[in-house]
Length: 442
Image (cartoon, one colour):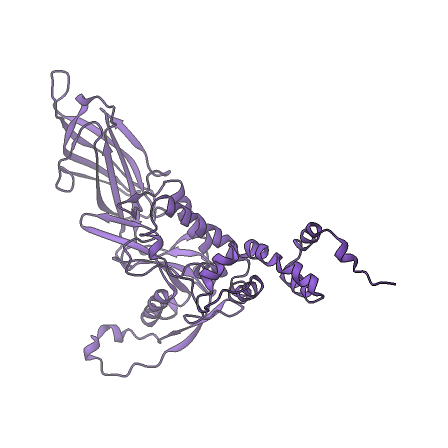
């Protein structure tokens, strides 16, 4: 009786459909049974790469296989990525890849290829750090020694002790992000998390690369010891040198802060939990960009929100006014909570020109849970802006309060008409509606 392989009688499309239910282990085993099966399974690796790593074989080769002259086949590429990515990031890679893809899409739609996207670094490699299967990595630190910071380097005579290895347990979503983009170049002015400014002060918040995070971690550990041993810097304010931290390891010293949380130091009190995870931290920011809560100003993301539950805008005599504030961490022990705020005032293009006016004075009521302070002055930041239909004026300033929550600013601006007549008053008070000063606005 002639040998018949009944599997060969199954239509090609049916075989491919059956194979679509198999994972990489089953496909590997099946490919070893016969040359026909090897041919059938070879065609499925492209689909598996797309399902697991969210990109085509060609794109993944270009992104990850940079050390080889020739691209890897789909099967070899899958095996390579499984070892390099899945082994340490688990099933966190694809969700993080999706968030980064949304950010790339937003950046391209807003012509940010030469600005924000150009500042991102290539995926982290084992030459920089090698994560183990249980998501740990060794970071070399120096023992706590504050005397080293009190003596200028040129006067230090003692020999610096050798670094000691410290094992750090990193959340897998953070590792997955590093395997997509290893943060930003530290010198970039196009911080992923934007800028805020007041007067002549301006700061830029970047997503740190693993190397930059390691440098800051070592410095903090050397000065503060284990107090900073369980938090890892992930975003950095270049001017203020303040960081957003990722909680690693386990013991944080705070009962409501857990491994994987992203936190922000807050004056004398407990840190703010900015997000429950690094994935949530990044996605929250991307959503703000997608929904225009945060917008671009001169190709830089502005951290002052355009709208939120803390903001209102009011129109008085044809002039709109809106304020928004951002919490800025200051040195520990200062006792105050510092907020930068931006005031926007404008007239619609089709507004009645008779409402055109010039600002002459300002009045603010700064209310906290304990008291209300008033501020009066001429102009704003030394200027006396004029507003006519279609004009917009913005300025930034700062305010310190003694409470992290429950404070607000409100007031009014006095204007004089540019085209006075018998029916208009000599001075027009334009309302500045309340906006909140709350540390959750960070």
